[in-house]
Image 1 (spheres, rainbow, N blue to C red):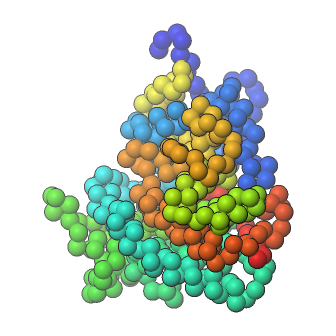
Image 2: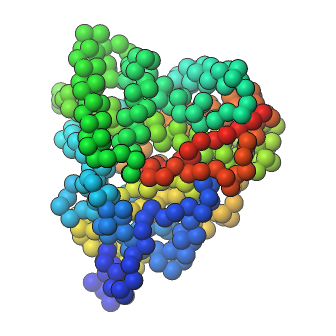
Image 3: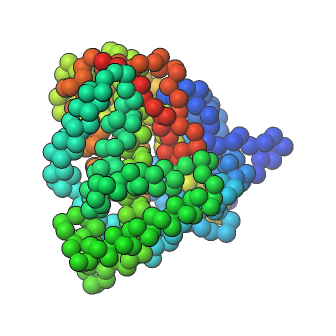
Length: 415
């Protein structure tokens, strides 16, 4: 190791307890003050998870981007010395049968088999259905009158409808999928035995669903994967198909549902923002608005944990093999070294190379789907409800506690 580099450990040597992570938010929409302080003075910061295990937190744009793209920073949270997120499990959604099954499938091979379902052309073909569903949800909300919880009435049901449509799940079963999604992503709402029981219920449902699909595959994603083969002729096993359903549910429902709520909260918190969108809801402005909302989101949840299989040099420090590192994409997205006036929300910002969906081979497979859902909801609401406003002051909005992906408990609105 060269003398100008420092080896970082997850144990704090000065006797002061490491700060607990995730950091508390000052309000549901504002960034933790610790982000700016750490970027400036401690970009590789020892932190303590709810389990009590230590980890290293990265908050600078260049550092987060580098580690996310480094193959030595793996998703193997099942390693014996990997930090546990909570005390009641050994990694939760980051380390379970889903990760094991998809690793056995071969990550790149699995992604290639799914990629054709998430191309821009394929997702664009889904947009009319999304618009129809969004219109139905807005119609029902308007019929019931103001005030209303926009998250519950629009933000929550639309993404689960989209994911279940991809999986060929009957509409009558979609509330169950929403419940399973919440259970898989919550840090402290459920006991371990509840999580295990919910996981078993989900796997049993998906196993039966896959069996039924064999008799009538249909033209949905799951039906196509039953017979899809890679160039070597290999097909996905049932366990891998179940894990695919779980991965899509986790990545495609809860994250997007919460992002819809946060997007609208950020726009409505300063009415001038919403007036600008409704005055000129062109595809170009909608597109840049969605990208800026994704960058600006301070209530993004946990971040992306990585387990290091080798030492990695980052920003003049050496992160040791065996360390668990958390890449905070949300903190990195507020880095003034990467974005001009990073602390300001600018609806027409371009270019906007934010890290919200990650980078490299593990970047979010469904990012085009998420972008399309956000743009669809924004377009429909701007057209239908230009008078939309928060029904409570913005600083009274309440963040969801304990959810890995971050969000609002509710979004009260009027019109």
